[in-house]
Length: 274
Ligand code: NAP
Image (cartoon, rainbow, N blue to C red; front, side, top):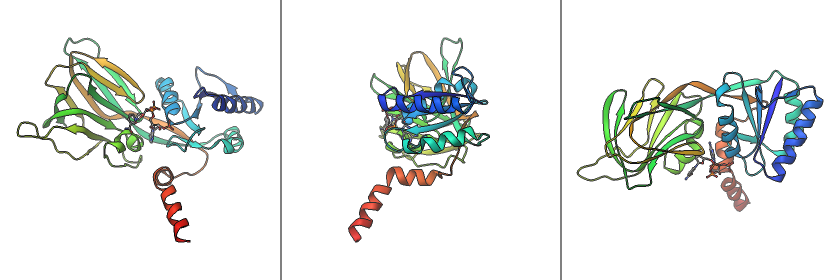
């Protein structure tokens, strides 16, 4: 089996990367950055996003696993103390693979030409540095609303705990093939009226955003942002592709949600009641 390791780049992550690389080579696994079967990310969820996008062209062949060197992550869910155990599990291949849905974003230009297509592991956000965005929002080919406000966020189920959560979106279990549309500060008055609630779209429902006011748009896909002008439409839907996680231990999604957002408080409450 071929593996690659993507490190956050700090001293601790680099040290863990070097140790894992050496041990896995000693177990007769091949280090290969071009065509890895397994990519190990060492850092945080941000590092995991980078690793995902570095190998997004070979999702069918590559599985991912994350070690966190900061706080518990949603993707980076192994702690540095468990690294030895993880190395032994990896060396024992084959491993179990769990697949999560992705978001597909297609940006079309008014000037025609090639459209830009991206896959997001967390989300895509559309904003402008230039006042408000004004979009006609179509769902499954029908006009749904005209949105005016700071921007819109379309997230995957595994990204629902990231930016989406900060916008008041719901947390979606990644076994559900869906994308979620959340608003950023919509303007609601007699002219503009939006639903206000997050919308959860199933796999066969496409969301199309058509700018009404021509602006320069800041379109972010996970951790990188591009500026677009002359945008005709931005199409978002559940992607055909899926991300594959190598699973070496059970760590159910709701346990990760609890441990990341509520466990501390529960522990404090337990301590208070003693
Ligand atoms: P960043 O601004 O340096 O970090 C954003 C934070 O989001 C980090 O703490 C990161 O965890 C965490 N995160 C990433 N994916 C997550 C997930 N699926 N569930 C829960 N938390 C998650 O940016 P970055 O490291 O380049 O990551 C880009 C991501 O930042 C975007 O995809 C977006 O979701 C998120 N973001 C969030 C907000 C917000 O909540 N208001 C605003 C902008 C962007 P680690 O510390 O483990 O890396």
